[in-house]
Length: 190
Image 1 (spheres, rainbow, N blue to C red):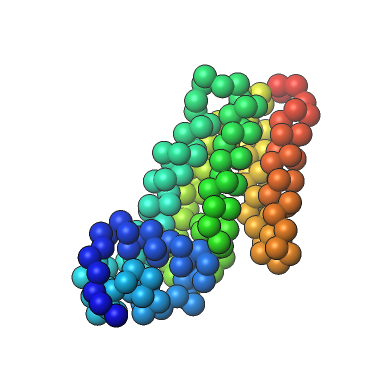
Image 2: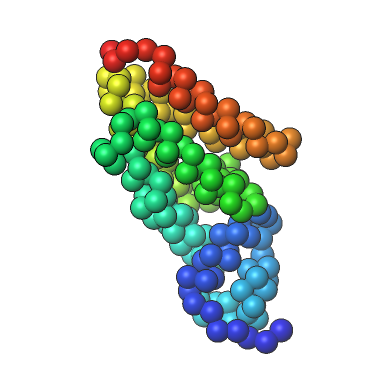
């Protein structure tokens, strides 16, 4: 296979797609190099290890969601309900755009108990995700109730991906969105 010139960002993008599809432990450095059109030895020019690459992939996903998804929660030009719907719909769209589902959820399940170095990056992502959801809910509920609803929406979303993978049916994701909206509409501000 000829060596191709690729950017570090292209390597991260290809790795993201492979890690989403195959998982961290089932993806080898040879798989990653092949996906980028590189020889395995050339791959180390970009990243010293698979762990270093995975950490950068996780940070890239976090940066993307912070700039393109979580930011929706803070856009005061929309009503809180509309922000919630837009944010969750965008999150579902992004995760469904490529095979494999939610990378952060996948990696949390696969690596949290065996690879401590990824935990801070994943934790920061989920903390920011929870904060964004709680901010939206705080437009209608007190801080405690907003946090509880945010946690429930986040946990349901991640759990829905398990069912999507088991059944090949994406209706679970739409159900999460619908239930989040129903919960938002359920009560008056407390």
